[in-house]
Length: 567
Ligand code: DGT
Ligand code: CA
Ligand code: CA
Ligand code: ZN
Image (cartoon, rainbow, N blue to C red; front, side, top):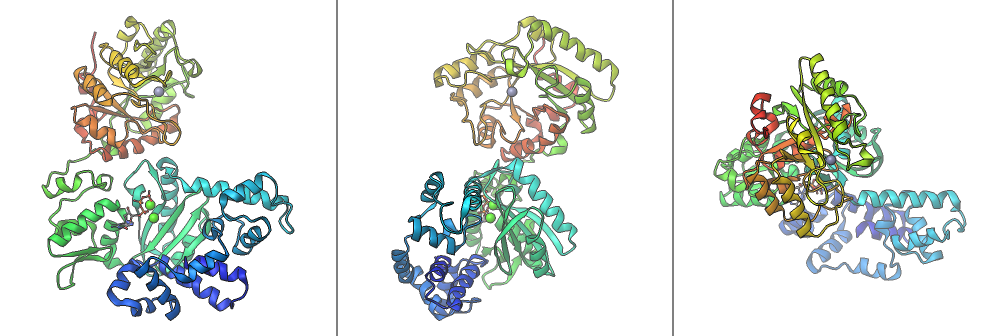
């Protein structure tokens, strides 16, 4: 609201530059506070507000009015004369307050919707001093803003975060640089990135962060927090925290929020106070702050990996000391879902095997598509028999890694499998997936899957819900029924690691666990680089609380084979 007041005063042109800047400065101060302004006001009243940098008596009064009554008269009256959504419109690249004002005065544009409409009718380029180029620029700015309004796939955001963290570490300005927030918890999508640093040179650190190659523009900057818009279209927060409270800050900013609220309640129950600066006893003395694990220990709680911190029951387990030992990337011994150029992959059996071997894997299951997947160049029985023979040949010529004969068999519309039993029996194991006829009734879909899983020929169910995050809903079926039938037939559930799949996802993994099911964390690699996506599948498995023992491809080959059907 303060920022908007500043914008409106500026375009009105009736006030001094000084007054405009006062509102903007106050807005930045509040945005970058480490503490909630409500708390400051509650503790110290108006005087507390006036102690904040750049907040004088007038603005402090307006803030107090807002906190007391929910309204700010100054804002309300300005908005009456300018019913324009300044805050949203000025977020569009290429649109400052002055241009927004002109668009309102000349075209009566009050919000993004009306601006889009005007662009469609090419009204912007007709304005004096705008032109075709700036209309296009504004259109692009809106598109970018809308993209950034949504959440981004972890698989796109995390590599960017890793690059930024790497740069910040290399700058030599920081003592510690750590990822926090939803990306640290490996959530499948992230709203923004959160990075914490400790440094003896906060100004240079902020400057260095703001001028990184990945940064499109700086949205706000203050002594403890800087927010930038990244070129990939999401924002990234950098927080400078004190070394002495780094652990408490990590605990707080890893989140999630619900987890934090519960942990804070436990602190209160124990007679302590917990915030992002530390854990304090009743005399206000800090008893844990520098080290994150210490914060939990002093609360008599067992440490929980970030991936588990979603307030889904982990706090209760932690209090009982029953946090499971969850799977790690290094536990994976082999891959059970990969494609070659015999169907829709881009590399040969040998090339895929060599790449898997370089990744340190000791077995690789080749699961090319069956004939129903025409667009993926799926093979029929005749071609498969030859293909399986080709795998045997490659196996004879390599020694370090063992290639397993398999297929990603289409579960057809009627629940039957897309290859003959005789062909299926020639394989080491069988992975079955749904790729077509995704829009069936819940009853029909459940029946289709149940039939396939109880055929006695399915070892692994591939990407079980067939969702694509952000673009395709999961197929409509009774998952409880499917899990029950899978458990009865020893069918392993896949966790497909592809960032847009992550299927099963974390919540469904927790559900499937209750049926005693086992899992396979696979990459679904279609090329040699795709083995790198495994970390997203492992992150998802960890978010589903899976232990190494529940994931079959952590086993050495001889023990894994016991999980597969034999004929
Ligand atoms: P995102 O960005 O939507 O994917 O999710 P997060 O979890 O990264 O959320 P974000 O970036 O808003 O905040 C980072 C962490 O800071 C969050 O996980 C927990 C903590 N946090 C933020 N706001 C609050 C709050 O109001 N209360 C508490 N207790 N913690 C908060
Ligand atoms: Ca975040
Ligand atoms: Ca954030
Ligand atoms: Zn598939």
